[in-house]
Amino acid sequence: MDLRELPLRERKKARTRQALTEAALRLFTEKGFDHTTLDELVDAVEVSKRTFFRNFPSKEDVALAADTELWSTFLDEVDAMEVAGLVLDAFRTALRVSLERMDEGWGARFLATRALCAVTPAVQAHSLRYCDQTTQAAFARMGARAGFDAEDVRLKLVIEVAIAAWRHAALSWTGDGGPGGLAGLQERLDTAFAAIPDSVALTGANADR
Amino acid sequence: MDLRELPLRERKKARTRQALTEAALRLFTEKGFDHTTLDELVDAVEVSKRTFFRNFPSKEDVALAADTELWSTFLDEVDAMEVAGLVLDAFRTALRVSLERMDEGWGARFLATRALCAVTPAVQAHSLRYCDQTTQAAFARMGARAGFDAEDVRLKLVIEVAIAAWRHAALSWTGDGGPGGLAGLQERLDTAFAAIPDSVALTGANADR
DNA sequence: CAGAAAATGCCACTGAGTGGCGTTAGCTGT
DNA sequence: ACAGCTAACGCCACTCAGTGGCATTTTCTG
Image 1 (cartoon, chains in turn green, cyan, red, purple):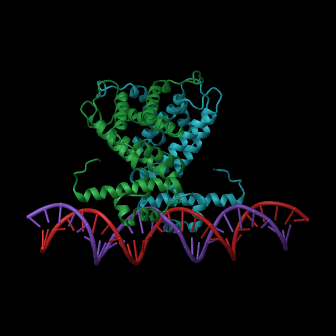
Image 2: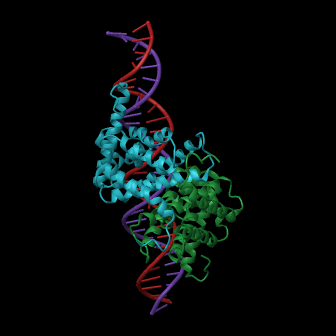
Image 3: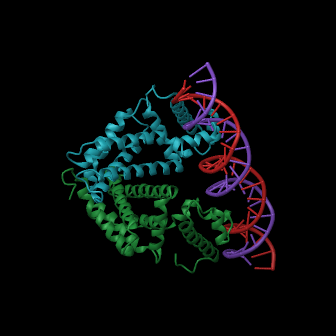
């Protein structure tokens, strides 16, 4: 990301890519996703529409760059993590470390991205698909590990639960305007994970306190 | 659904809607979702493209008719269900009863729909969005109930877990070609729900048996 | 500095989805 | 049975996302 000693060609490509994500987030936020055409976007960055589609598979994807950065890092952490105790805790840690590894300004971009998701069905759908793909990928990587079973329903479910906790944390944090920055998001994440044991044990009798 | 004593106009509308879903499922399965144009579909049913979009908001939605039927029924069951013991069990029952309420032939249509989801990203994304919407709706309805808190993280998570179990059951059942019909699907659902306590308690040490 | 390789720009095209409007078909009163 | 009403439909023109092809420019390599 911050490597300045890449081949010149790739540096240029990375710069246009970043310019596109920044302009897209700004335009989508100002005018709305549906009311911003790709022509407006590529005009603002001064590239051709063809170049846009060499960098992003769809209009939705450029709005979700912050998400893909996180998920990509998360999968690296899943590969690297050691599972000593509860698998659920290992995933909580992987999420926490992934958040810590995000670069300066990611929090603000992520917040803007989530705001777009909340009001634009198409972006929301793409975002959910990324979540699901990440879940599948994490499951596949864990299943290939020594000591784990690639068919284990329990493994699949625990990953789904971890991602659900993450999604709830992100949604709640975003809904309140992202208080406390990434540290605030970490807090929500801890709260959500802490609530998991109580949630599966929740009964009609103890629901109201 | 089976009410033959509707106004003639609405009966006609329902018939074209059904003709569209059937033809769509057939064409999409035969030629693939991406390689079937809407013009081909509406020609086969002999309606105008305009009429198609008065019945379905998008091309993806006509492929997901089986899903929407289930989710709509499920939300009715959520409203009607009584929560005596575990909330998780209540949702498992609601899912089971919803499946039982599906009409003849739904199982086959659902199987075809899931096969489409597996190979077509756009359909998959829409399907995930329906899941999520249903989760949100179920949460909102439960939160409005006496004895429940509309802000309770535990309630939100337990619904996410239930839907995750459902999704895994459906995916596993579909992946094996839908053995045993809807009864087979019910079995997978029971298995998935039964694995939930073990999954959150899963550790690196007991993962391999 | 020459030639390969990659990235870009331009152009024409397909296909999803929308708005407008005239026409048809089913529903209402008398 | 007939006239008026309204919902649904068909047709047409249009916008915009996304793709394939090809010529051109730009960077890397020897």
